[in-house]
Image 1 (cartoon, rainbow over the protein chains, first blue to last red):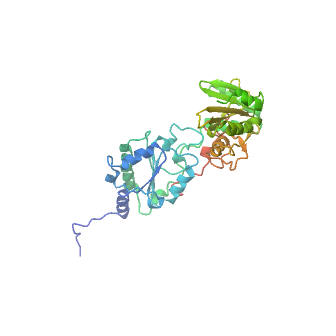
Image 2: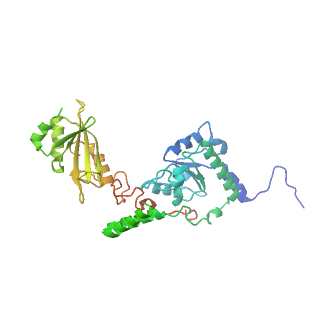
Length: 206
Length: 163
């Protein structure tokens, strides 16, 4: 005997239902280390109102969050903290890298600043800008929701395939060269370092 | 105002004085630094160490010494200021700590140690203050490359499936 569905019941897949629920209640973990953090606060404040997209519940405990927003530059001393916070967040979890510094190090191409957090933690969404406007962050959150709905599964199977590091090569060729040069100097092989430094200057890369 | 002659009577003619804009600077050999500073504090009432820092003179035109260490003193009562400079060299740059004179020297000396590798003998707690403990180099030395020697890439990588 065929039973017709009442009008207030609809059929869907479990994955889709879970992703729909998750995407509309992203709880961000604000990791605000610099001026991007001010824009992040502005995004959550009354004018731009992140609550319209269901992501207003900023928690300062990673255990209660599922969206890490890295806003600002991350230095060597801060990176282990960031990695620990990422590992402390329960599954399923996503990460937005907000601003030029978090994405690539920005103008801070120095010895202490990590050149993009995607070298060391997985990133789902990049927001360009220095700092990005709140509208850009809102767009990223909306895009994040779309991504969760598009790819999300109940058990988080979509994460298992992402098993390679996302970031660029750790060393640029120029940097590798400089490290090599420094090691030669440390070994006391001054003549070799001087010769290579001279040839580099002659090639115009110095 | 503390006259150079007064100081020279006590510390000899190795003290020299120079002016740059309104800043009066006294150069002193490292061996006499602590005696001079404690004299300036106890007899001339320079009761505040405003700042203390160092300069790396590597490849600097006309520089005889590798590092200059600079003490900026202030007499709070009269408003008189005095800059005391001294020089240290590799391979073992070391100076006496002035923590016993001004407590504020504690973190300043740690910072100079962290950035330049100048050791302050007698400092109560000479550790790195800005860079991580395991950092091996002294980044404000002129022979240290701006982009580092790869320390900033030396971290474990966390992949998505692995977290």
